[in-house]
Image (tube, rainbow, N blue to C red; front, side, top):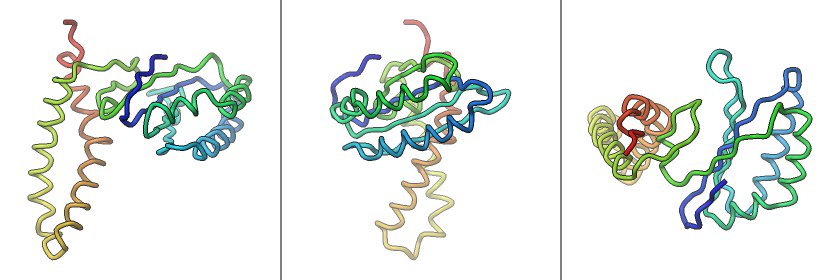
Amino acid sequence: MQIEQDDQIVTVVISQLVKPGSETAYEAWLKDITTVARTYTGHLGTNIIRPHPGVRSEYVVIFRFDGYENLKAWMESRDREYWLNQAKPLIQSDPQVQQIQGIEAWFSIPGQPLKTPPRYKTALLTWGAVYILINLLGIFLAPLLRNLPSFIAALITSGIMVTLLTYVIMPRVSRLFSKWLYAKS
């Protein structure tokens, strides 16, 4: 795994197949390791994507940290090593571990190895998506938020925008433009 030293938010994506019949024990293990990860400085959250029949057979665990040094402290910790050893009887093979930074996570294709497209392409697609979404949200939310203080309206609008971009818009935009994003130079 290659980790660049930087002050950006760093995300580690771990995917692994669980042995059939070990799902309950693996779920308990997930709860324990995520509880321990939360105690580390700079931990910003953990997301778990569970297997979905016909779509994805592996578990995906996503850890976010506020920077490289704090991620490194977690990745090299004895706590993490202990919990990885506890999981060995539950998983079919070594986990795949990938590290990404910033909004690069928006430009991953589910079920495929994580590759980072050129930054100018990610910037262009993000800019286009944000432009369209901010105008649509302005049209639909303005009547609902007009009586609120502007900073509260901006807070609500930006929260909705980031949520939509992360979970709805950018995954679809990434798939739609995948040939252009990942074209061989």
